[in-house]
Length: 263
Image (cartoon, rainbow, N blue to C red):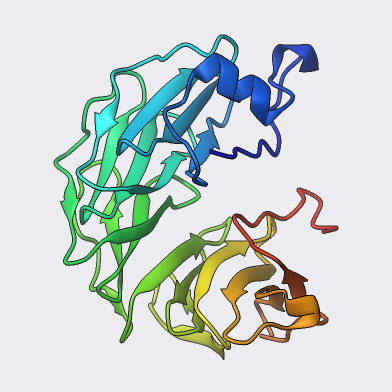
């Protein structure tokens, strides 16, 4: 397993793990040979990880000790994420379920949310009030994060949805699909704002911190520059214009904007 730690806030930087190797040694993660999800809590004190044994585990970021019993899915875990206030953990799995856990105890907040296909992605809204899930059956669903109640009809697509993102103020919802589409919807009205057609499966989408830009990672059907098969594209959300040329990569495992939106 390769873990990339982008940033964790602390009064003393020496209290934080500086490299992936240090983290691996102290957490004794069960993953091997894969790029599995991991996420810091908002206060930087905890880490949630997904392992190849289909478990979700919560760790103390200072000591590397497990904090709650592991939560087990029946298939690979595709996403893990803390709620904005750190009180809940969201999981998404290929077993066709998404779960919301109490971050203090590990208990289910409500029964797992069942989907018709694998749940490829899941995320909290910026205020933590609702969650969005994306499944292999071509749907993006929204549920109440406290009760699991379905909030509206799903946003539908003809093929699997690989990723979903919500803008920082909750105005926009973006989906990325296996057949090369990126769509941006107005979250409140479900009105489609933009659609983009790309040459290959789109695996990731991410909004910038101010919500003005959207980035997507596509596995191009035909290798481009220097036979690099992956591209990252960035659009201005309001106008839909693309920023510059696609950025070529050998592979893309995650996307993130800098906090000041410089890159």
